[in-house]
Image (cartoon, rainbow, N blue to C red; front, top):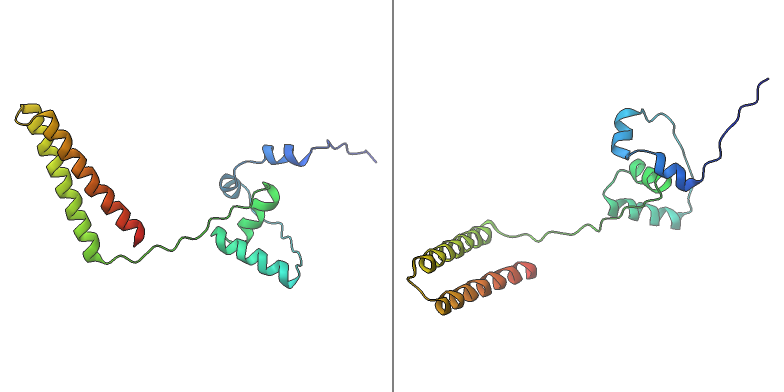
Length: 138
């Protein structure tokens, strides 16, 4: 009986040779099923991490084991903003852009001086900053 020779590869070397999980899933069939047991406490931690990652259980486990990655994306709850508020912010942004365009045109034509131009732009920037800070508070 012929002896099979195997090359010993460290875990780090294996991780580097394995391709991207999305590509791997497309090119290889996932046929091998692996099961494991956890205590209630460990299971609660595992399920919480999977939930935070936004990945399916199997993909989370593959990432953790094969690539030594445990990707956890904290789910950020987006605030509910009414359509009316979004519409008003859109109108305000449009008005700021129109004013900035008019200022640039007036400065290029020599209608306004540098001091007036800079002062108006600073005011527009302040309005824009205030709008952005309001959005972060919503």
